[in-house]
Figure 1 (cartoon, rainbow, N blue to C red):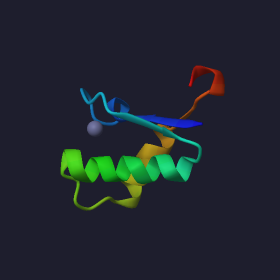
Figure 2 (tube, rainbow, N blue to C red):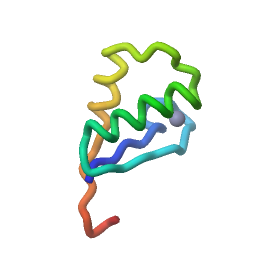
Figure 3 (cartoon, protein in one colour):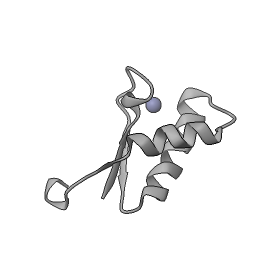
Figure 4 (cartoon, rainbow, N blue to C red):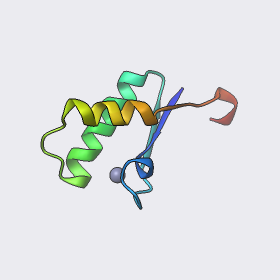
Length: 62
Ligand SMILES: [Zn+2]
C-alpha cells in the first residue's frame, strides 16, 4: 500500500489517501488538490512533489 498525507504538502490539511499503486495515490491527490485547494492547473513539478511524499504502508497497519 501507498499513502499520501496532504499535510506534508499543504500545511494544516489533514486529508490523506491510500491505495495499492503509487499512480492511484497520485491521481487521488491531484483530484483533491483541484477540488479542495483550487489548484486548477497541476504542474509536473506538483506531481513530483506528491510522489516525493508518497510513503509505503505495511499491510499490517491497514
Ligand atoms: Zn489537502
